[in-house]
Image (cartoon, rainbow, N blue to C red; front, side, top):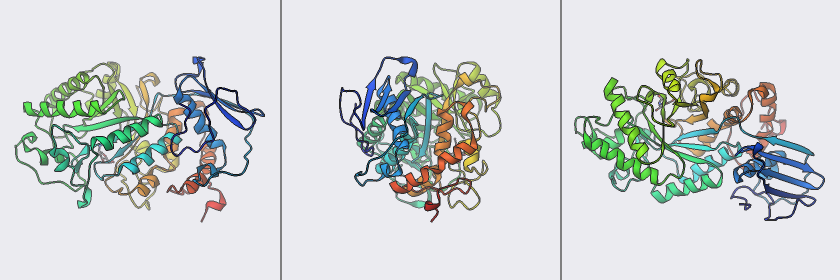
Length: 452
Ligand code: NAG
């Protein structure tokens, strides 16, 4: 419990004594006014004490303490000097239970180590979910023992014709357990029924015309789908979701559902309803893009809303029937959108998203007709059609990810662009010290010594 995880060089030792001068004590309490993820951080002459109900709360208190220490805390070089902390007490807890980011590992494949670095970024900003978009037209990235060609054939491609790749189950479990050690739950997505060209290349019997399409390495969407009229499709889905659920300690299974333009009306809702039942049979809770809305409600169902212009009637009706929303508005939270016209990678179909645009919205009131109580939380997706390296991932995430993180964590009463911008500026030297790439957004007053 008290062992600092890799990459967190806080000088913490296991102790049952109160904080001694210069010491840091982590204490579990049953004072549940702090909530499951909250913490109290007290700095006095006697030392630092972090109190929480859970290990997660202690971890978040440690992240805040880390931010109070100088940027050198981020350096791999051992610390030799003494640091002073301001005295005081912080009592802190999140607004929403679901705070996340998504990485598309299908359009371009990313090595396990790259994904672990993304987990580090989430943890630093108290985000607690990593949604992995594991399958798409351009590649299938997760091993499924019962359908091995998904990865051997379907995983060997990516956008632009590169080699692709996939996670073995051992690779995937490494991500899951590293994430868990950083209090991050992995949400696996198998995108169905569309965005499935890579599966059809591997198993043509799943294709509507039973003919293997050529591998796809472009960036169009909406052309592929698994055959919703063939029983073998549902055997496939049960096998895949069963194996993925078995690798997943968290409660969620994301089944996509977006842009299946060729599967219309009742064929689409019938497909989704069957797939939702398969998810329920695995013991997991259905998450999907908000296009799932017209299908019947199942207990706990969560829709990820990625619209740009108010919710469609179907989504509002699904919320009335009990669905909760994860908010990922395309024009505020899609971190694959460019910052400005000069951003070297990314899209602009939902507009440009500078740091202020990522920050200036309120998840609790953003979608007219969706009450705060129906909002499970926020998520910042990063699609990777043009993003090919960890440095490019970091460039798109930072500094916008902390903006989304703050919307997920803090009360709207504290919303303040000028204050946020100034606090964000202090993170530049931290990222620079840690060797992390970020965009020196012009609207943020980065400290002068970081200007070069
Ligand atoms: C959407 C697609 C996604 C694509 C992204 C790019 C969703 C749910 N679907 O068209 O496959 O990568 O935009 O911004 O976002």
